Length: 211
Ligand SMILES: [Zn+2]
Figure 1: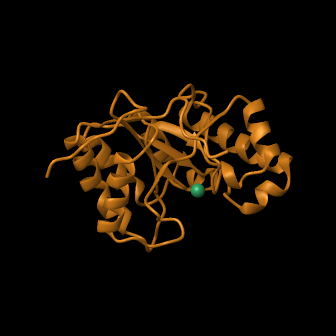
Figure 2: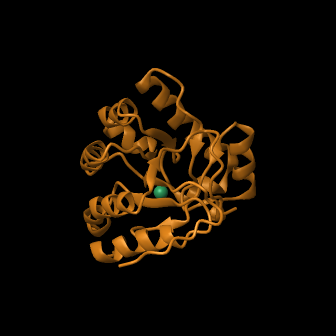
């Protein structure tokens, strides 16, 4: 099947894979896959999950991936008070720093996306020197339960029609939603076949923001 590409806004065929809400029991499988294909990704972890899986945090970093901050608890109530919010971010940062024995990059993803965050929380995260990143390709494994085939199509079509550099959002922690996890290897293989290279997010990267 012939494929027509449109890269009006991206000269390079780059894609960013991001995994939220971990680390958890699926993370070793994800890391094994990334290693198998020799690619890097970004993990927006929760402190509460890192506390349960500290070895996985170290593994993420030692295998060359980016360690992002996604607050400590992901509780929607974090947005009700800006000081609670930044405390959650700092607590996660400090926990990561202690675990990996160096300052983690200040890359952040707002729980539910920056379009659901308050103006005050966006201001304070920037005042603290964080780069925040949302997503523009989503495997719908938050509220819905897509099949592997559906997740695959969402990824490939999403990347191919992306007006900006594609940032794919999927999750580590999905107890009952195995479709996107099953689709991960086919997605990587297909995008590689289509000439994409995978990068990890760095603190200075200017990528999709929803707000
Ligand atoms: Zn999340």
